[in-house]
Length: 249
Ligand code: PGA
Image 1 (spheres, rainbow, N blue to C red):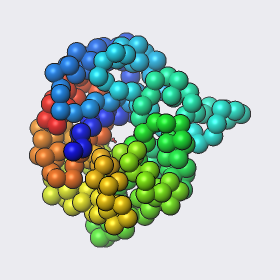
Image 2 (image 1 turned 120 degrees about the vertical axis):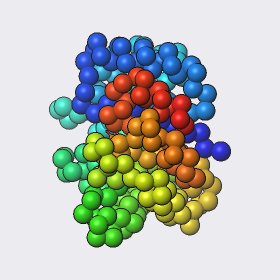
Image 3 (image 1 turned 135 degrees about the vertical axis):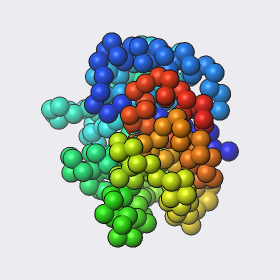
Image 4 (image 1 turned 30 degrees about the horizontal axis):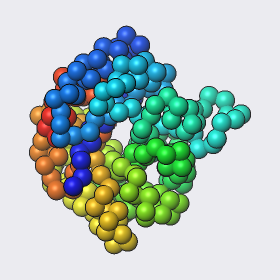
């Protein structure tokens, strides 16, 4: 049985005051969520403020990105050991915004995944196609390529400690959600890729859906057989919306 995970990706939003208030709201509501694991991924600089409030609550902490190197002369970067030291359990890697806006390649995403796993944290690896790729029938090819890059560097066993987030780029922040059937089809495809090599890893690996998941569409998405939760952007910035999605899981 895979425990659903609802992870909030705050992206580049917030302040210390906002983080304190949002975390307080989420932490209070989290006590009544028994069927899902909850995580929040604030911007790096707000991680300590969030950690101070969610410490000793069921809410877990994550980061939105990380560098592949160990501590050293990498101005402006954040290492896995810093994130672990700050209390992070999860690290998002390969979000489509990082791939598209900051030129992150499949190879770099695979190396970031490796760095996260080596540091003993869980990677939330994002995959997903653009609208153009979907319309040209390339969805499975794109997702398979992104998955295989991580597989080649980390091996199939690593998927016991990886969460995959399927996020169709055309659904992110657009209010245009994939239908439950569209999402389920890609999730099942990803799981089949894994199970062709190792059925246990395929059954253990949680595959989240991301892309305009909201309180009103969360339960139909998460009730699909291969959808094990959500990576939530916009709706994770409001405690009541985020908790409603957690409750739907
Ligand atoms: P959204 O973002 O929920 O605002 O569409 C999801 C994501 O980018 O992780």
